[in-house]
Length: 260
Image 1 (cartoon, helix red, strand yellow):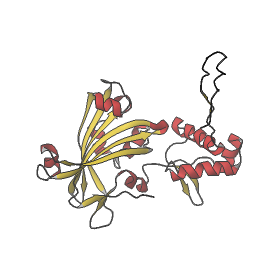
Image 2 (cartoon, rainbow, N blue to C red):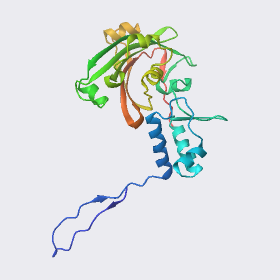
Image 3 (cartoon, rainbow, N blue to C red):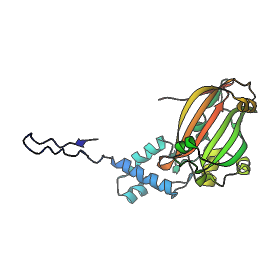
Image 4 (tube, helix red, strand yellow):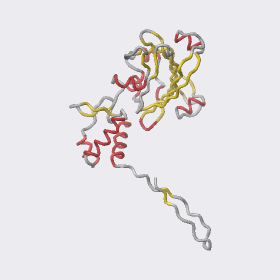
């Protein structure tokens, strides 16, 4: 970013200091179009799984070239916001797509292959946000939150214990019955029933010993090393809508992260 700085007057003149005024940040035209498309996604004009208008239609709507629109869409597709389908058009990405599952759960069996996970919800309750939950979810202390506890099974064995914190203003109607009855991932449930799509996530990993509760749920000995995965997930507008603390048993699995 360029910054314009006024030079000080000569010593004989007044010693008034000029203010520093940053110049406006330049944004390429395709990024401006990307921002406009994101606004449409956030407003719900185009829902997850639905086709967006063609590049030609969007170019006419925004009064830009088709190449500018294509560049914006290419970047959004690379960020998993949109999905191109050969011969069919461009669609809003959805958590219903099986490929989206691995984006947010990078657990792979040591023996190789891909295993579907079975989510077993245990508890769902209302609470007031403490300092940490408020900070992670950009809430005020004592704001309402919804907390979910569940176990993920792979090949019939418990592997992950999740404790999920959600803003009560959005997820106040979430129930244990809803979690148990829904056929699909929890992110698909959030998208389908609450209109919230997870766009990206930040994670922190460290090793911790299993406490009594996690040892019982994961069928391991107390003190067994577990992988702690703490995640904050964001929706459109970079708004945090989920804080999750997971404990992973890595006796038969490892965490895979592809770089580059």
